[in-house]
Image (cartoon, rainbow, N blue to C red; front, side, top):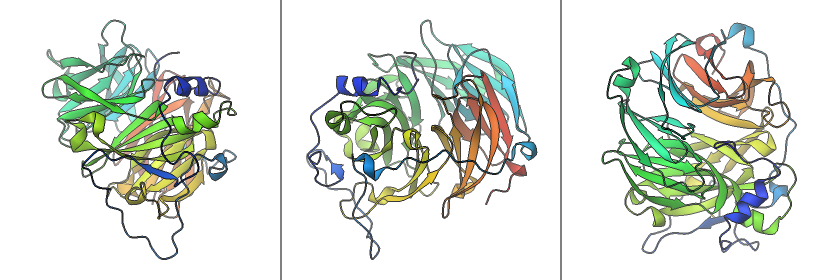
Length: 419
């Protein structure tokens, strides 16, 4: 299977069982959220529950995770100034440069550098991947100086200014991610840009890379398969890892229906991950049917997760993710078919979701949907290309990679009625 193609319905269980570890203590029907602190760690602080809060519902029981009929919203395509630029291979990760003049997209065979004019893009130049390396994820350090792109079993690091100008020395170096399955997928920087975290899709782990010394530090163990998303909290203290198939679910569900697998959200102590990744996991919570990607609000209080198997966007309270008394699930909103990419917009007031519909209509145009963050509700949608996969945006434009159309679409956010 090509790297970065999140597990299909038929292969989900096989992959999960190959990676299976001993079930967590609560797999037999105990508390729904698990904690697995390393020796000497204290239980993470949990905010006080409001009166009447229910016990957690984050469980491996599919009955707790409803499926929704794929929703539609008001069509904003004609007013959104949507434009698409062709690229020479299937694009996955995308990131907007802080200067607003460039957009980077990770293609299967190269890193594309695209000149931006408003919401429109044009391919300017590209940096080829190393021989045999397939590109997928891309991330920008918070200071805007370093860019990272994940390939099959490497992380390539670029000087952003030199990459924009196609100058010599743009590629700073590559670091092995130690991915035995050669499926390095999503990537995120630590808040200070000194480390990078790479989701190793079929290795049941997240690689930790020392950016300064360009060295592999170690692996964060994930108790599941199809590790597809990583995001760092705004304060830099936590890493949230999305995994499509929890081993605990796979152990008791040998033959689930299509894409109907309960996934896992793993909470990691970033400081510990930078020095001792094997013992950096603070705890886990079972989340949704085939959760794929996540995005966090600017204040760090809310994690938005796309549940591909539920056609839903989940809203989670980060303070209570590991609680055994407070319910971290705030809402589930029906979105389009098989959502994958997700991004927080407008200072946290809205959320954008890429509805991939990758299994039923992989070659047909699909949509990016906009959801209000307060009392989540659908606002509108725009039509883009086939299999919209990853999203990034700044204050004025949103960009989405259309994997099966070999294009990147731009949406003019200034023309939309966002909150």
